[in-house]
Image 1 (cartoon, rainbow, N blue to C red):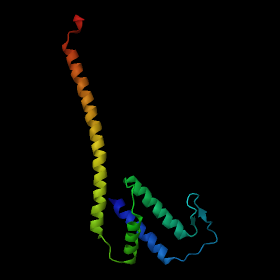
Image 2 (image 1 turned 90 degrees about the vertical axis):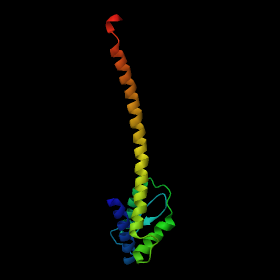
Image 3 (image 1 turned 120 degrees about the vertical axis):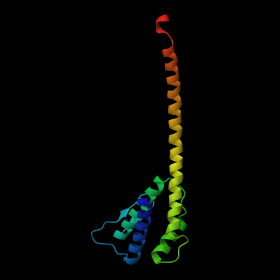
Image 4 (image 1 turned 180 degrees about the vertical axis):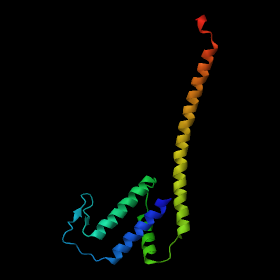
Length: 141
């Protein structure tokens, strides 16, 4: 549940930092480029925002979110940072995120329950076999 509050807070901080800093490159900061997109991290703010995005991306991936509407994500961040009315209030947003977490939990639980059922079924058959074996007089063999 802590992650539910941490991720939006980090995103808000990133956008507010971006809105308040100048786009200048420090003398000691060497631009980093990524080979896949050609984007560069020219300022500390660029690096911080990219790091927040990376963290959010990993969090979403760990929660099983594979399809993201970037327009809505950016809109929510922008509206929140600018103090504009949002489409959901924080209670509604938390309810949506909690629903996602519960759905993932149910999916994982169902898989584990199936494994447990298979284990118990297998062991029950073994126990029945051993019990029948004990009923036979081994000396008669």
